[in-house]
Amino acid sequence: MDSVQRNGRLIERFTSDGSAASLRPTGTPLYDAPVYLHESVFRSDDILIVIRCPDAWIFEDENGDETMDIPVFGPNDLVGGMVSLGPELCKVKGRLVISIEGTFTLISPHLPKPEDPDLPQPLRHVHTFFFGSMGIAVYPKEPKHSVIVAPREHSPPRESFGARLRKAIILEKIPRRFGTFHKTKSTPIVDSLVKVEPSTWQEHSFSFPLPTTSDKKMPPSFSSSSLVTGHGIRARAYAENAEVSFKVVAMWHSEEQPELTRELGAPFLYQPVQDDLPSDFPPQETPTTGEWADITLEPVDADRKVPFGCVVTIPHPCSYPRTGNLPFWIVFATKPMYGFLASDIRREATISVSLVRHITFDPSRNTPCTPSPPLSTPADPPPIIQRPARARTQTFLQRVTTPILARRQRAMSDPPEPIVERPKYVEAEKQLPLLPVEAIIRESRKVMFDVMVGFDKNPALKDKKRERRKSKSNRHSRRTSVRSQESEAAAEGEVVELKPGQPEGVVRGRLKLDGGMLFSIDWPGLTVEYDLEVEIKYDSDHLMARVPVTITSDPLVPETA
Image 1 (cartoon, rainbow, N blue to C red):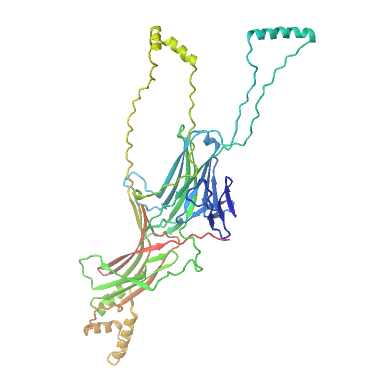
Image 2: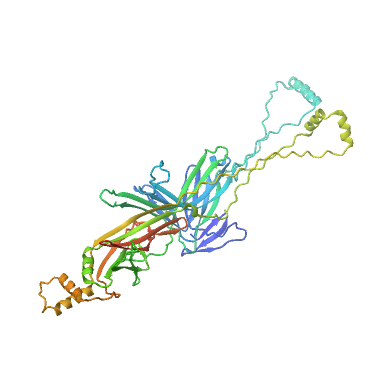
């Protein structure tokens, strides 16, 4: 496509590589919004929505019978297009509201219970994290580009009584001379009607910029359904659905009949990553920079002194894709190093690693969206024409209502001043009651977890034990157990302070992330956060660490045949 024309004027020219060079002529009513190449159409019986977009994807239903073009937008794009109203809606005075919204929907049987005990347990929560709207008044008017000329009948001028009498006498004499005369009705002269196809649909343009912030990213389009396994013996598995969706809604309602409304929604996708994907997408392993972060586990009871210390090590930075893994290392060492205690911890300690998700809905922090000025101004209401009464009617009323004596005085005096109507008493508008503040909703649960019992020996410690066995082979029998050697070493007073890189026990593992899990979101009014919780339990000692991690979203890729 080399060019796009509108109203006979060239607006933009598209080059061979798909880029657009702006060619705006003088006087073209445009604003600073790009003209996109693709158009997606959504229609109903009375409303038509056309969305112009830089890219569009075709989606098919399960049977493959119907297809739908879904617009795709990225950062710094404008969501714009046109809304058309059908002829039935244009005949009634009403109002058109065009809105754009982004919603987050969570369906789960474990949503927080409402404060009112009489209300049932909610299974679905819909949160709107940004919203914008614009209103247009719609007035009934004649169709555009149509010419309607009413028929006009040419009648002869009014004749006097004498002329009509002479004409009657002549008509009576004509039959005597020329025989019978037949009267025929004269056909009226009608002006020719200009038949032009009327434009019965009203068009209204709209444009909304997508909200952006300097330090936060708007969540992309997302939809998933996952099976959650319960914890405990009687716990049941349940399905959890999460979705981030965007749409443009056109709603028309009549001012004369409030119950008469029409509504149509047009979905679109938001994808912040639109560049070419790498050849190894999706990644099977978590990309690391070679750096690791060490986090020390702290006692749950701060007043209790624990004779050993633990450290968890994870890749740095703490950001992992949903299609990858989360590797971790956990090491411990006694303080001071004590062989018998370390051996007992390696056998009896319980290690649990969990990935905990926290979702917070705060309706008071929603992000507004300001619409751009539309291309076409809304239609003005039709003027009300008041025809003045005839002069003789005013004179007749004046003669009836005006006394005779006052007539002379008014003729001699100055013309009367115009009568000014008294202003009617207008009641002060009552202030609307404040809307109730919606409560903040928080939901937390363990997405995945792993439980292990015992540590493995440190490879360096194994080599040290092996050398010790060789040096003491002459004094001890080969049947001597490892535990007796450790107790003997402790009895000899081998006390070594904890040094970096010399742990007495180590465990290595990884959490395999799920590609359908919800990603991290940090947006005003909506947050999805993850914490990596590591717990070590030995006897009555309890150590714990909570590490914030970020789960990144993968770009949505359309399936190719």
